[in-house]
Every structure is written in C-alpha cells, then in structure tokens.
Image 1 (cartoon, one colour):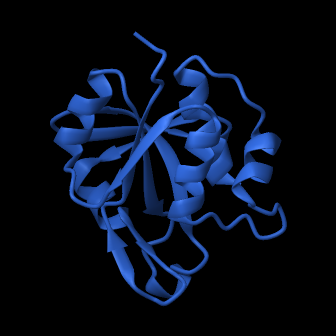
Image 2 (image 1 turned 90 degrees about the vertical axis):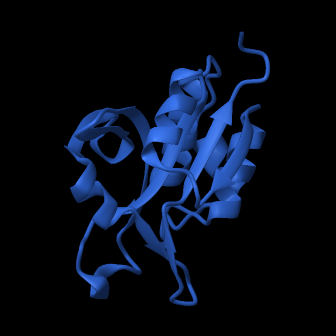
Length: 149
C-alpha cells in the first residue's frame, strides 16, 4: 500500500509519527487491492495533521524549491512503461532530491530505500491513469506540518 506508506513517510519526515495501518484505515485503503486515489492521499495527509495541496502543473524544479523550503513532496508515477500495465502499476513515492540531471525518490515499496533515475527517464513514467482511463501527467502532492518551523 504505497499511498498510505508515502503519506506516513512524509508525516514522519515532518515530525509526525503515525502508523501506516491507522492511515490506511482513515484513507479507506484496503490491503487486498492497495489502490489509493488522489483524494484519499489528501485525506490521509490531513488526517496525519499535514496541510496538503495537489497539482498537475508544477515542474520538478518548482517541486525541488518547495522541498528545500521544508515541504514534503509525494509524486505519483508508473512502475511500468507498458500502457497495458497502467491500471496496475501506479505508484507513490516521496521526493528526496532533484538536481540538473537526476531525481531521487524515497521509495516505500523498497522499504524507504532510495531510487534514483535521470530526469528524462522519470518524465516518461510521471503519469497515472485513473479508473476511467484518463491519463494524468505530473501529479504531485505538497505537504507541510503547520506546527513545524
């Protein structure tokens, strides 16, 4: 359940420790399917005590600036480049860093390990397909703890 796990990691990095199972229950994400909608991501962040804003318009550079200012950023991307897998391969990860050539993610699927790829490669995967088959490019959720200085 990468959605609740990513929200938990963003909260933890913001100084809020909340169990993933508690978030999954609040987000109404079931372990058997693990599917998490964008609305559920916002609900989970707010339940954890974060302020959350979603976008499909921010560039990686803008997200990196926001991250450097203290926000935590969650991205939705595809783990497969094959369109036939799109319904099954949407994935959430927490942004760790963006530089001129690479993007680095904290990947909850890998136990919080670091995943690094070129910006060009990541852009090919930075999409999601909703239940109606509509392709959503460049979805992000920016979160911050209102009590954090």
